[in-house]
Length: 91
Image (cartoon, rainbow, N blue to C red):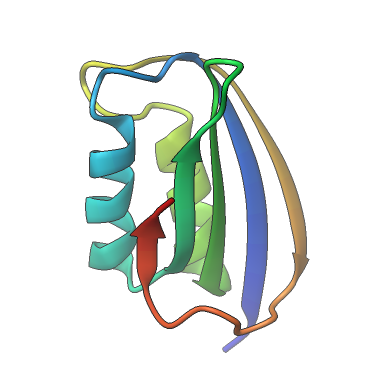
């Protein structure tokens, strides 16, 4: 089983629509660790760490987001797993 890390920036109508709440819910369901936060630019930023297939599933989910979100773009950068998180949290 391979573990990876993904850093994502999600743009579109993603603030004020519970995007972070649903991201936390999905990440916890998949067993992913990391964090999510709003950026002053109106985008949402997140770091996901976990099993490769679960992290990739999380990234794919971000391309759709919650039912209230309108995702325009997802920039993703995959890197080596660092194992620095104990849970998934909102920052």
